[in-house]
Image (cartoon, rainbow, N blue to C red):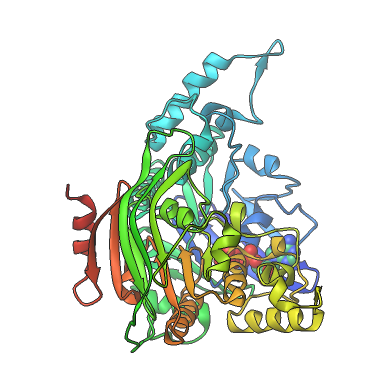
Length: 508
Ligand SMILES: Nc1ncnc2c1ncn2[C@@H]1O[C@H](COP(=O)(O)OP(=O)(O)OP(=O)(O)O)[C@@H](O)[C@H]1O
Ligand SMILES: [Mg+2]
């Protein structure tokens, strides 16, 4: 073992019932570098990181892992943390009702004569908050902060354990451009301090911006490792190894022309669920036509998700006011059920809390919004349910040995595909999709874009909330730009550019 590498993985193989998730994977990470791990949804990235950090204990996989020159023998995450390896999972794992400092020191607080010295911990945690650049009181309850800040608390927690190797599983997937840029800077700063990082990401532009090396996994196998500078690595080169072929057109063409207005919103205002004086959505008006894709852009906290959830059967906010017209008829939708009844479908951005029943099968999750459609005489037709779920598994390439598999066992991106399948099966006229491609690999993204295009060609309408500007620019007929709860302007497909959107969001 040479001193050059902080981590060496030799022939790591990991099986789950019916799936070989990792197949003789080899990976070497140099001390002090930023190493990116890329691959399609279900390629095995998260599983590999879980295996080396003790989430999957020694003995539950084959092969060898060396950390700092010694073969590891971890039986839990605690074991790897003790040696300086810290992992920040794809789905954040903070305790939402505890404070920042409690989260930072949770599980590794030292007591003196059995007494925890809270003051010391508050002071100590301030030190780590400074290091990650988070300006919050350490006593702030975590659930009161956005995802971006929660992410920083996770990193502060890792630093507090003196991490030498930091593993970040899709750290920017829920962050906006600004927050992402700050996080990437932070990882670069850690590099200057001698900390090694492994970053899993589907955002290849970010990978190329900060990584020294890139390893590509495909179907559980390590396909290639590149030195970014020496190989003059490009996104296309990474994609080719990820999918095993060239991928040319990321945004498929569409030639449909929007028709009559199907939905119109006038002066829609939504009040904060707890602080009733605050307007999270402020007098918003817009319209949606048949066969049209609308995108809503704007910084995190602009009120886009709150607007969509409140339109979808008042499922957000203390109170909302304004008018909603569907097919020209004024409607008041007081529940999600009423919204479904009016032909609306909603795909949530937060699959963990709002989207899926993790302990149920893929099939049951897909069919759950369409049970009456799939039933005859009050009984669910099992064969049809099976066929429909199979159809979506194939169309969206959900990676699993069987649709009877529990959703919990799917990779992050494949869970997202299940959420989409469920709404597609329910077959609404108006699709509201919130960050539909978050955590989805480049190849599957294009498939989802194709599906959205097919929907509008069939005369359906799509409202898309997207933080990825290229996606909004590539897909939408019109783009509404929001900030601070208000619509700041609207751009047609032909006139829209990234600069115009950003400018519109920020002026007055
Ligand atoms: N607990 C489990 N039981 C059964 N299969 C599993 C389990 N965990 C993961 N898998 C399977 O192992 C494979 C690799 O999954 P993994 O989560 O590592 O993918 P990933 O590369 O991280 O994908 P993504 O980009 O979607 O997050 C997938 O086919 C997944 O369904
Ligand atoms: Mg993953």
